[in-house]
Image (cartoon, rainbow, N blue to C red; front, side, top):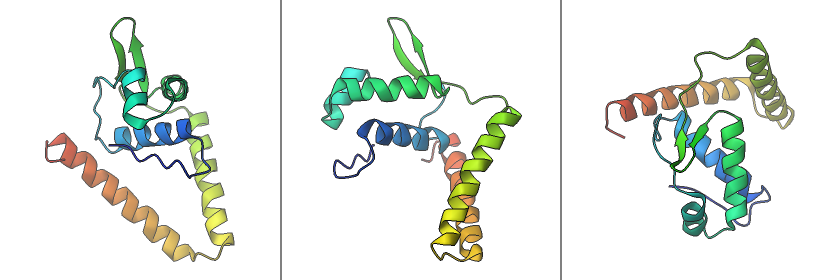
Length: 134
């Protein structure tokens, strides 16, 4: 389910956040699905519950989770639309990443090809998950 690399310099809570985001965006976790409790997730990953709690808090503050008191955390509905500010922030992040790739010698055509492949793969995964084939 999750890929946590204890040797990675990236903090574990960020890896948990990224894994959940990846699964939600690809359609692997659907709206309203209950996520494991903090304690259960920490036990499954072999990490401190405070680490998982920090990840869950971030996911909730960014609109990926919502919590029902006494029932747990669930996958939130995707936003109806993004604000112009949110879109601008995402484009800025994408721009920084593209510039980094170009600076490191990756050719623009390869960057474009990668983005197109990822877009197609994500679209295909979402369709498969929506049809129950994933």
